Image (cartoon, rainbow, N blue to C red; front, side, top):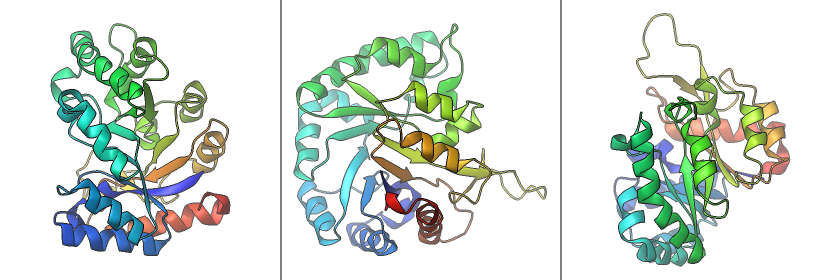
Length: 261
């Protein structure tokens, strides 16, 4: 396995191509060898290919506008091939498809054909969860429904371990359940909310191993299910430097698991 950086962590530093280029260098200087491109400014695929090569980085997954996956499937896959990425993700259920069986059925109707087309083109649709995917909809949650409705070779899961834990799931058991479908996942940690009420986000996100989640157990479980890339994602930094947060996560994980560099 390898540890990577989800660039959404530093989205404020990828708003222009100049900043994006500088950010890739900073991430590489920390020690990361792989990234997820998400939440950045627009870029040409050739530009990204060259910037990645300049910094000895690989883009192993993206999140892009979900509508493009449906409406421009062939073009999206071809663009990703230019910078060597075949795993193309969506960040969760579109807002109008959440919270009901009818909404999920619309998701299936919309994205299953695209997932099958991506598969036939040599790419893979990746589904990233938040916490609400684990709410039961007529007895089954969204992850269970996707497992039933999408062929195994058409979709995998960018399992966000932090949001799964936040939803009350037994993360180790969830990892076992998704064995073989977790080549790229998100590392996210959180701590108890400060008692002074200074944090107003849904969870108090921290660098990996600086929260309360049992990451030794999680990473040991991931090592047994074919996980290739663990991408650090810290959505909120609360005034701290996001690059410092990425550095601390990298150092905290690699000190305990030197083989994941």
